[in-house]
Length: 370
Image (cartoon, rainbow, N blue to C red; front, top):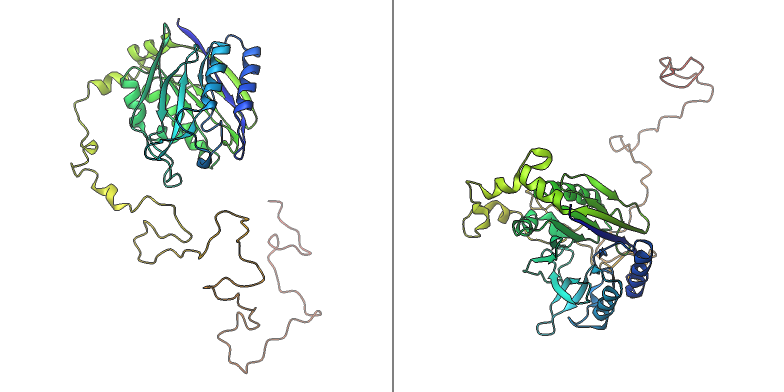
């Protein structure tokens, strides 16, 4: 058995000020409660939240704080990710750091698949992140949306990765889909997955840990959580040798494949269908994309940057370009009636009720108990 204890930290993330002190405080608490923990993983963009206006240079005081914390507790530390700006070209990358127990930054990983079209201002990384924990095993790192593309995990596990560390920031309605993808990825690639989400501006929580058989070892709810889990890397090696539960040997089957996939050759033409899907852009109100009609979506003029913005037009006047709300039509429902036709009189109060079928309408008759 090759045991190794990894703790995820699901914490509240504020978008408008630093969360770094809070992260270090929670790390102190975690190590006081569970001193046997050997690696700690925080959620995506936990240090400063999801706004790229707080992007920092590649070398900064915050990184030094995390290095000191890792050194103090003698743990491997992945402090989520943060926006780092390249001083040469100004590009901003969503970047995770891997810090060893000596406080050294041994890897930097820039997210390969920013959540486009919503994260259009974030540059995509191109280098994979693989590192070894001596006498334990091989680890890999991906960030949030990366896992939606199985090629990323395929590349990592083909290089021998046994544990996938996966910080996420998901505050949207697709969290259920992500949890399904995490389980499927663990089974497809026969690896452990630590999927750590944040709270508040950092997500809706529901972090999870999955083993190579797709079994969920831990599932957080919607509150702060610290969850140290001891994993067994020998289990990964045994599963990869014998197959998941003695069944599918998927990594070896991929290795021994008889087919090469032409879709990965951009010049093959195999992906011609993908070119018909239109641009990668945020849908607008009334979007007809994909419906094979020529009616364009109607964009709202001068739309505010976010709900409740001060530039929201007043409700006391009408926005330019839109007709006023029509007044109620007193003749609604009588369009086919002649102009001089008399309006039928309302039934008199003395008029008896029309006959009804028992059990259908409430009346003096008995009603159905169904």
